[in-house]
Amino acid sequence: MALTGVIRPGHCQLRVLDLERSIHFYTHVMGLKPMGRDASGRAYFKCLDERDHHSLILRQADRAGMDFYAFKVSDVAALDRLEEDLRAYGVATERIPAGELLETGERVRFRVPTGHVFELYAHKTDVGNEMGYLNPEAIIDGRKGISPIRLDHWQIHGNDLDGSRDLFCKVLGFTVAERALMADGRTDMAVWMSCSNKAHDIAFVRDARDDTLHHASFLLGTWEQVLKAADVITIHRVAMDMGPMRHGITKGTTIYAFDPSGNRFETFCGGYDFYPDMQPTVWTWEEMGRGVFYHTRELNERFLSVVT
Image (cartoon, rainbow, N blue to C red; front, side, top):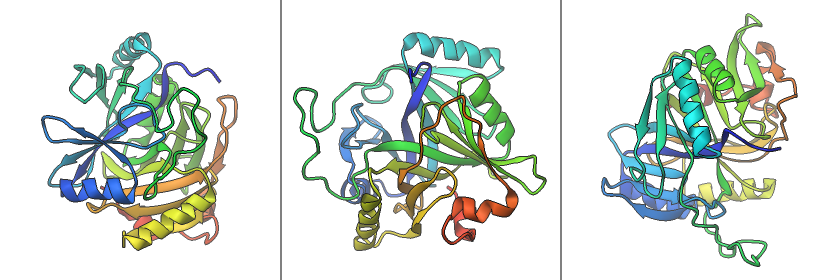
């Protein structure tokens, strides 16, 4: 599948309450690679397998949550075209100059109807993974902590789900892969959307609390690595939310836990290949428990209510 326009999640800036403690957590528990700090004190990280300079930025703040979410686009021409399309759709945009984030080119910033701030960018320095491009080994030796493959997707909450869903479909070229319906059988309670051939690159959930984060998700390769992540989480006495378990929605196997600031993260694997010609999978209100928690088939109040 040729990817043009928006191609994948690229980075996000996370607010943390204790920067040094969070740097230790994301380095030694999550197993991400520190990539330096900028003049404002923000700390940058990448997963070992990722090739671009960073995918996660930590900022000291007085409340947890996410400042913004960014998608990489295929080239500068796509960035310019998408900014024009956003403006034509009635969305205000702002150009953030190259270098405002380490090793990152110019970004187009905008706010969606659920209140979240998004960015699009075309360039970030390719620093390579730990295996190199010439005659590489098959694995990265000496991985520490959970050590996910990549930042994979986000689930975010806000009131005007319909507005954000339509903007992502009509302007940014996303496709709805799965839908969960409210009790009326018509209104979307949640949508899982793809800009690639993954089951989802982002999920929106209808919630009166605008501009909130449910979780940032990191990809693992196998179910055994998910189980290892559970062991790492326990060894370090990390607050766990749910798992290990399977979702009916997206079919992924997963663990949810909280970083030291209370931001929820997910480590998951699995899912399925999705293509734009596929009809979306639909989950009814009565089957929501099985859709979210496939084995127990019961919804968990903390999972539904806690956001940052």
